Length: 240
Image 1 (tube, one colour):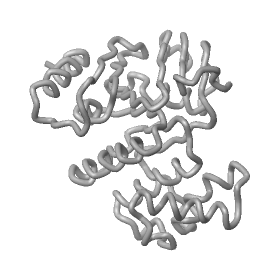
Image 2: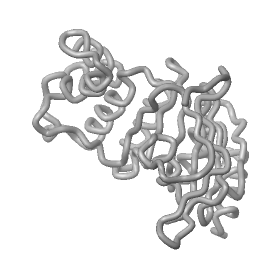
Image 3: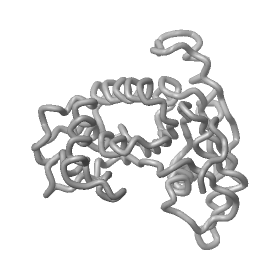
């Protein structure tokens, strides 16, 4: 379904989902505004990735209403690049599936790879890349089709601390230029507070808290305001 408003790129209303006898999503309501970053935090098994799969259209056996603008792009913790394709072929693949092929697709891929700092790696093979470079390439593949909604499932979880910080900075840079909506699934509360406009807390498949993060960007993780929001989220997650 396409959105009928200009203010929202994704809405879930009353979403319920079962796996056998397990009630994994319970009356989930969620909205991502145009140009908004929403983070979703929760313990393992709380249903975070299932919500992302519903939004992505990868999981359809649920009840409730899903409205998403256009074709959302998805990036996962593993880059999921084709090892037998060069980077430009990997990134252009995202356009091939939408019917754009040949030189136009490769030209768009080259421009997007340059935007994520891989303009010198167009013909590189995925297995020659560092973890951070591979995740940049995965971001480029997600963004090449200019989506209105970007879905990120623990995208930086496998990276070392410094690479993770640089990827967070790159994501904010790309977001500030293109203003797509983002749903970020993360287990890292600091990452959620550093990036998001709003953080949703999920427990046993239900959204139990919605915490606004009205801090100016770029955000200083050492401030009292940052610490206060972090503490509220940790408390909601049952970490004291």
